[in-house]
Length: 79
Image 1 (cartoon, one colour):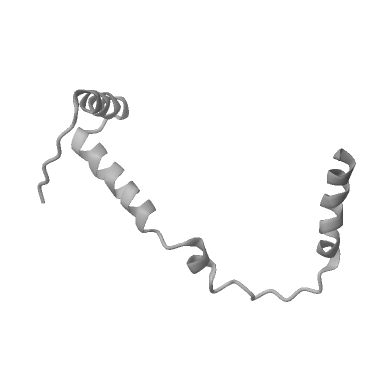
Image 2 (cartoon, helix red, strand yellow):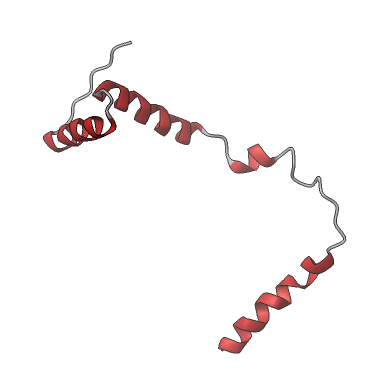
């Protein structure tokens, strides 16, 4: 499907230079850039991607129980 897009001179120049540097056509560079941007915008939120794993690990705390104090000590020394 053909689409029409208007560029200012600066963007047109950058597109030409970037396509040449990559050794691809301007059309290919535009298609790849648009696809990458669309994937980034439409990507599901991280919470949705991790939903099957959240809450799956049972732990008694172990050493992690003391991390709060480990971080708190250096901060208190700075005050």
